[in-house]
Image 1: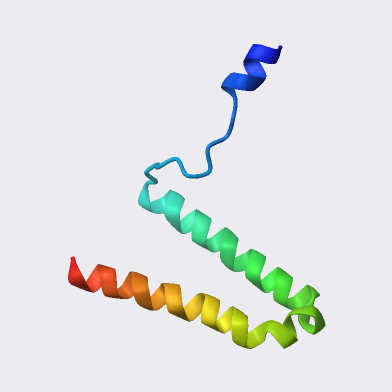
Image 2: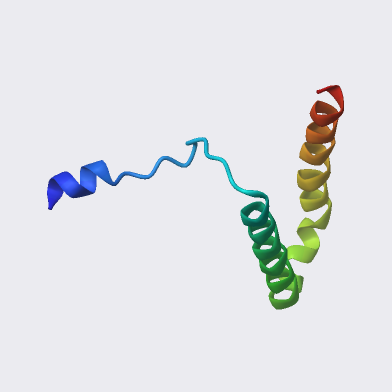
Length: 70
């Protein structure tokens, strides 16, 4: 049993490839999660709105720049 647990370790930085429909399904699930969190806890996240906006915008701009350069 212990050997199984050692071999089953999860690597969150592992690279993998998704088919287009799998990527779409992942994006759809993240959209639903975002709507759920926003609808459930608006008073908690409202003070953090500028930080969350920057947390979205800066990586999105960087990824867009990398995409444009390729």
